[in-house]
Image 1 (cartoon, rainbow, N blue to C red):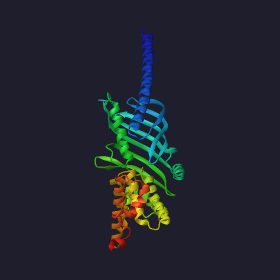
Image 2 (image 1 turned 180 degrees about the horizontal axis):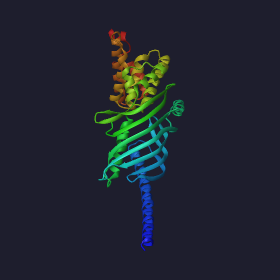
Image 3 (image 1 turned 90 degrees about the vertical axis):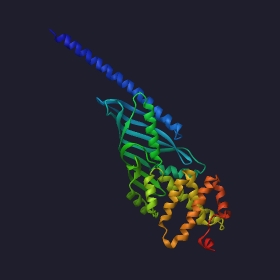
Image 4 (image 1 turned 135 degrees about the vertical axis):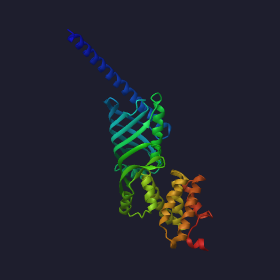
Length: 352
């Protein structure tokens, strides 16, 4: 007697739930694409470049979680004098609701990567840009998993999104990020003519986390590259994995430029010019505080018998930072090194 009415009600419920399910997915997909666009606009406002990212589909993975599959796209990032197009991808991105108040969430990104694709804008030095292009082809950032716990007001999701992106940017700068996160990943770079392959992780620092290379992997690279990195330099490279390429490139450029100019002008003190130029370029690219950290770390290897040599280098490093802060051009440095009374040309000159 009641069988047909109950069956009819069941069918109506199934149809209604199906409608709600697919309508919900439609809204979620629309909001997801809008969220990606907002994130790209925020990156552009921060001067970090632009890009286009999309995903294949989105679905409910459980009653309280959503799963996005096959995220793909490009991100244009300025690094030094170049704008590099990165190919970005993630196999799965899943988000869980962790609180009945709809304010606590957990995010997981699985099987993700960032790979340099091409140079969009080059600096003036075509030969240097070509070397960069060849090294980029052998570089990659690959991750197994990234987990993030965060708080979000469901009525103002943009604020949470901007805060997360802002903190992730701090990570790429080697700064501590106020995130409750963990990561398992690896980084491959060509520094000079040698490959650096290292394991990446997020490690606690203060109340936040920093991204760091395994220091043993950096030491292995230094041995193969025959670069006598001090323990201080090993720590700086490990703690600044996304700056490692530029750090080694600037150091190598300063060495090559000092040799080249001293051959053309025997009156130019090669060692003094190298330290001034190195410190100058680090200050221009990053800031004076970071430049001091890098160059001071290099001087750790000096023994007591090298005291005067170390002091000479520290003085010239300091002058290089001053030249950068006074906005001298790189072309002016050779003349300044020869004529500025503060520059120490040699230990013997300083002792006289």
